[in-house]
Amino acid sequence: MNTPSKTSTRDAAFTVSRVVHMLRTLSPDMPMQQADVLLHIALHPGITMAEITKRTGLSQSSVSRNVSAMSKFHRLGKPGLDLVEAAIDPREPRRRLVFLTQNGKLFITKLLRMVDENFSIDRETDARVEIERMHEEARAKEEENTSTRGRAKKPV
Image (cartoon, rainbow, N blue to C red):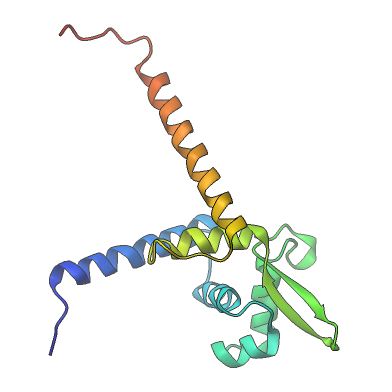
């Protein structure tokens, strides 16, 4: 029987910690049930609210509240996280199908690449992730250059 090494267990714990941290960058008080709903929507594009209820074990009102919080506008017209959108099912107007928005695809791609560097939702999102990474590198390089300007160079 194979037992995980301390290194692999530590690596796994570190990865989970990074995932939780990234989720908290969206909302410092993000409930775990909201993260659970988000991941179900990412894994099953077009999932119904009823199916999310069944898969997560949450009540219908909890699923609705969490989807609302992750939509463009939260309840009472407050700004939401803009990660998901609910569309009316054309076959059954009372039913809502839930999808990731472009922002949601971008976030989920970055999140899941912490676990699987080859994760991909679609080519457009892959391109957006790469462009964002290049911008972040350029900003970091510019900050580095700015912080070293004006300092006297050390003699060689």
